[in-house]
Image (tube, rainbow, N blue to C red; front, side, top):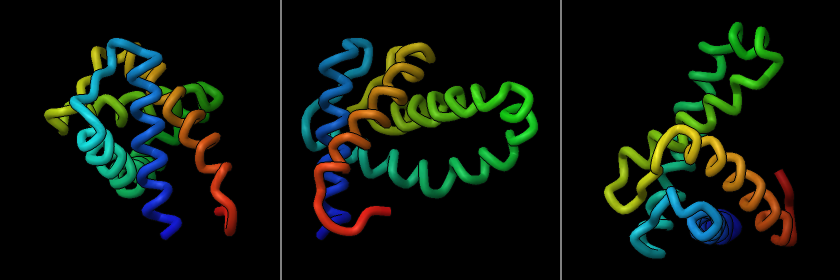
Length: 115
């Protein structure tokens, strides 16, 4: 039940990001649900591999490259889904940051086990 609620809250977070950044567009709540699901899969399956592969450059940039990696994965999700459009790299960078912060704040509202 918690996983379903987190998925819906992540979709709401994406809708809030599109409201704050007009260069990121969603076709509707169904597209937000699909985008939240794809972002979840990308962050679970692709990000750890890329984080390990880019570890040297992340260390050299004192962790700043991790923001670039998040933006590229956010942009990838926008390229994969037809109802989710990300306007460019800068939009993806700010969108990934906002999405992370908003999703974290919304998930903190859920009572129960954290982690």
